[in-house]
Image (cartoon, rainbow, N blue to C red; front, side, top):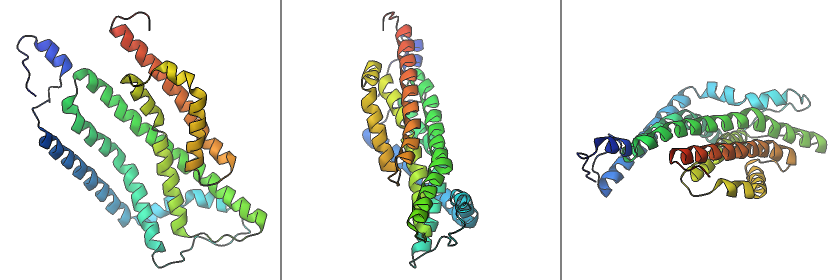
Length: 271
């Protein structure tokens, strides 16, 4: 879309990005295609790198299981495979998990590159902290799943086996599938508060609505926790739900701050 900035260049610089250029529908599709290709290439490179050092990556990902296993010396069996393809499933899960975690900052960068030409300078100032917050939230959730949820899930399973007098024989592919689900699933779940803040910032929802339906949101978070955590015990579910509730409260506070700041900039006193 062309524009005439000769009358008031200052206004043009404030409302439009200097990188903006006329683009048609198919041009946008081409840009999107190249963005997806770059994301796939980065993911493939990291997956290949992890595949080369898959033994070292496996040793790192086994730490949650090993730290719990030493507390149950009555169980002597380690991880096993019970099918010819089990070891390949395990290796694929290791490569996927590592590649996703390492690719996340590059994906955010490529996504920002894609949408940046359509944003004004004011919107660009929001884009950078948004991408940073999304990256930090994902890593926080992934770390929470790795260091807390995975060991607690393994411990609960061991305790139930000991209680029932059953000797566990766990397959390696099932353990790494559990690890993949908890680490990436919890990392994605921690993005929820950021979506709430963005919805408020774009005017899709009001802060008063978030406060009014706080109890409903807490119920939803417990439902999400019940879906993500693989064990049926309420302890692990609560462990995951509590950070989500805290992040929801932080999202309300940040949203109220942004609304207040936006109102002050527009000259509105009563918000």
